[in-house]
Amino acid sequence: MAVYVYSIVAGTHPLDLSGLAGVGADPAALRTVDSGRLTAVVSDAPPGLRAKRRDLAAHQAVQERLMAGGTVLPLRFGLTAPDDDAVRAALTENAEQYAARLSELDGCAEFHLKATEDEESLLRRILAESPEARRLNDEIRGGRAAPDAPVVLGELVSQEVRARQEALAAGITQALRPHARDERSSPPSGDVFLSISFLVARDAEDAFLTAEKGLAAELGDSVDLRLHGPLPAYSFV
Amino acid sequence: MTVVPQSAGGGVASRGAGPGGAGSGNLYDILELILDRGLVIDVFVRVSLVGIEILKIDARIVVASVDTYLRFAEACNRLDLESGRKAPAQLTDIVGEVTEGGAKGKSKGALSGAVEAVTDAVRGGRDEEKEPAEKRERPARRPARHREE
Image (cartoon, rainbow over all chains, first blue to last red):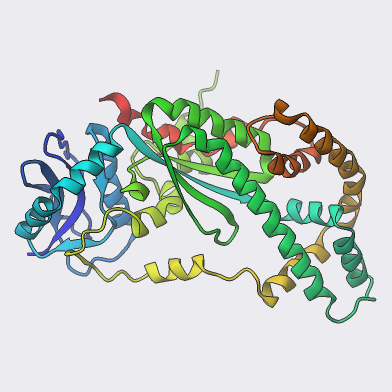
């Protein structure tokens, strides 16, 4: 029977899985596959698994529990192996690599930050600071603009938005970088102009959190920083 | 005296501070981590997951398009005229501050000079009040219990 694989941990991990359920509508029990040096946390794979909220939450809950007892290599959601033997073979074959990664991540956690900015106040500032944008906007409102004025204004504003948010994203990243061992960002999407994960050592966590809090205060309430963590190091495995 | 239970805090509290592991509000922001990052073992099979493709497409929406330009233009046209007119006078002052701030070098906070220009402009439009703590989403505090090992 196919098995769903959640995480890989060291063979010495205490593996407290009590009270946790696996993925699926009728979740199978969590169990482990052991290769001696490494252990994988698995469950029987439910048929027809999809990325439902319940399943993502179950996957994440396993990682969080394992984090409490040691270092964890979280697998990407949705990976299945044909059977326990295939899991054991993968553990054995890649033992050096996984053990090295576990050792590098020891005492570290991921913090994920998403930043959004209130669009209206941003546009207001752009209009206030760009005479050209203000002129175009006034002409359009006054009904005396050239037909292409909205596109010209929109392109100008769009460039301004991008430049300002890139500068802001760079500044936020620079301010937090000194407290992190590693970082990984995703492209902006929708109104999220910065989406970035930091790998933070436990002894730097306070400094990291203090810096983030300071940033939030400095940026005011038109910029929203949403910080999540400590998380399993999904972005740094 | 009246004691308001934590659990009665409504939307904000339930989003960030739920005691029961990954709450839905937390999960949303880290979906891409769970779905797109994490360790991949080559010989394992990834189950077909309807919905992931949609997330990826969303992440690739092209910003530079005529539709986007028109949307920005309309948003600018809609801005309230009166409060919009107040801004230039304030911003003249702010630009002055920024120039001075830049010359002063490291007397400001952790932000780089480039960002100071932006953030000072952000702050300039209103009082220097700190963002209320309860408004900040701080799921960061929640899993602290994991640290007791």
